[in-house]
Image (cartoon, rainbow, N blue to C red):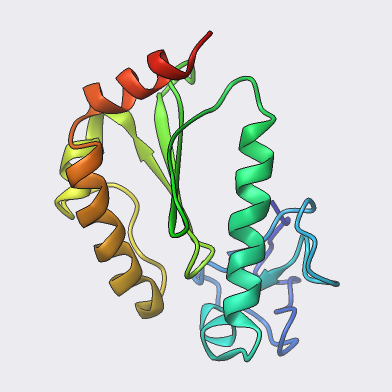
Length: 160
């Protein structure tokens, strides 16, 4: 993930500074999208960017590729809109939920999964552009992976 210091970092799209309490949209160096890998952005700049859809899809595909080749993470749900990967071996086991529409990644503690699906706790949205895609993803995931036990069962099914 891109290093961020609100005093020195600049938005890759507008070159503007960040407010001291502002959380940026950040990408990793593995992202293949021109000069926009390993950079930070204002959320509003990304939301209004003409390349936003292609950019979000590139992040989603990069995350899918990265997790597919990672022995510590297991993909338990993967379709054209949502990718869910789980690492139960972390100090705080978690599921990462990546949204293709926004490129957002939500890090959800496994013990909080069911509450997070209901919109109670867990990582918050950073921008209004995430709300509807996240609500759609939560509804789909609540039907497919309604509990933390279901997440862990997906890990066990995928293990050799």
